[in-house]
Image 1: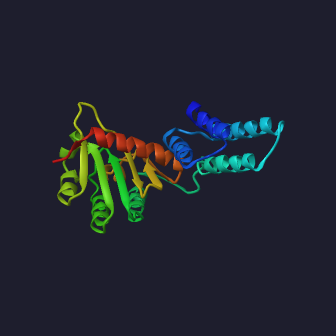
Image 2: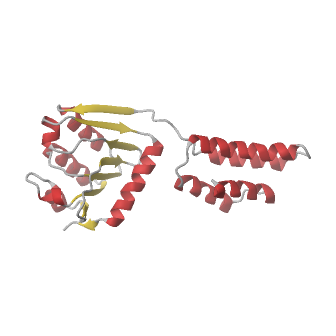
Image 3: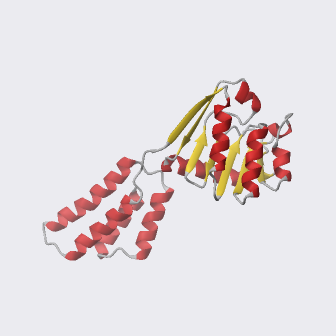
Length: 228
């Protein structure tokens, strides 16, 4: 927060919100785990600076400055998810939900799952890849050799895969479509999860959750080893 407040105070002091200041301010808002109360405080800080100045005098700059600062902050309002889906197994609903989720992809899919052995889901991943969707897949190295695992098959189709080669497990189960929808939950992408296990799955368009999961995916992608 100190860096964000410093930019606000700096632009107020020099009486200009230049392109570099706007860029730096937006970048900080994107990089930090901003909560709604943080945004409210930044807005309050801008108003306080104006309020103190009004005691002396007022001119067009201060009105323009306030508009610029609040416009930047408003772009990063922490929004609640407008669309959410939840489902539970054992039943076909979870597998079907994952397939429908993947079908909606137009540009990219980031998949980070412990294991994949449900052929219906695997088929949809391949379909997305073949129609030009950029797919990156992270999985656990121990599970790739399980009976029925589809990891080798997906790699053979040309899909980028990286695996966790540590003695511990990469146990996540989430996916991001087009950077605007997140799917996560306990549900493993397997036939046993679909038929036997008690599992849960949710889909959300919460921008804050998507940002956090995307950061986690990108950090893991750098750490994992290329599958071969």
